[in-house]
Image (tube, one colour):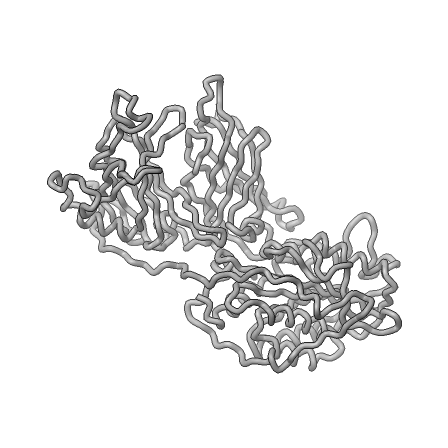
Length: 591
């Protein structure tokens, strides 16, 4: 079974259509439903699953605080839809629009966010982040109050009464595209007060700061407006640990402090676009309760608890390198057929020792992992005449053959994590001009754009004077992929996958084993998919030998075992790759 990852899903929307002739902001909530992917064997049995519904927000630009938890298996297809509903009750509510997302697409995006447009206007944003287990790390209990709010500035000065205010807390999320804040809590408004004390709150630590008590938080105070166009009064940044410390010192805050922004236990509320503070906010209460502890004792006060300082679950990873251009020096088009040369001594290095505190695959993806996909396709004579139905390369107008099915299923899952979406496509085992070629370029260019480009490059082979031949020798394509991987920038979060599609056993198993062992310290995994009905037992022996004598970097799966379920094929093919990647970067000391 492939490794699974716990994810947190956060939702927001923007530019939603206003309601009625008064152009007021709508009352909006979001319903999240997971959908079994088409083609999945148990799709009919499982059906849609309702994950839950967000809180109701009156706004054209809602930022929902409700966090949804998902379990994702690398290589699988996990789809969900977000139904934005206008209204406060089920009987009178109506749908504004539905947005469909796929977890793999979000995981592979640069900022871990995808946006979908709605037909009636507006957009829905879905952001994901790796999660600690829901409920672990304890529960955060806090209460905030304002010692003073400067409410007589700008448009607020025209109001005859004191404003109604609410407080919103957002946590920082780091992505390769930059940092952003995701809302995790919003209080009820306190009516007409410049010294409001907002509701006491208790939140799961996983939802509040994802288990990291030193993660930056942004606390914002808004003036509540009935039409939903709330006004930002000011904000400040802090962390959970600092909030708890300030709560310990809250008794020192009194009238004699003059409500100074430097008072112990208080924060200066920074007005947007101004250097002058717009108020003083104090932490009335702040602590972290142990997991499964009751939040309140008999008289309603929180149970005593010391400051907790759990270590952050994420550490800063190395900066990502630039996307390298395709290596056009090692492979030529079927006209010149320059042979592949590679310095085996340079590739043959001792295996790296395992490291503690190994980053997970999801953490590496979140830090900007860039996966480089190469595709190699078997054109030996054992595949059969591609013009005859029933042979492995036969293509008709009604559907895809087994090679194409594998490229779409497995290649698409990997391509989501590629920044350039440019993939070299090679063939092996065919004759050109009477000479057997163990590696040759497919397509007119050194790289193909996207999975559609890979399929086009594969189809183009049958428009040439290619003659299927033999033997089945994958060492040349492995060397070419190793040459690309050896040129990745040092310290970059870049990793290569060579997808080999073959119908039979390799001609020289010993040479293949030696080569796979020699390249085991490169950022590269060899993923072999067996096409056809051959006995692939020897291929399994090669994989077992290679992975037992060096860092695991080879995987094999038989297409026939999953031919009726593309999702099962990609899941089985990719189940070991997250561990390969995590182990490689741990061995290189990437922190």
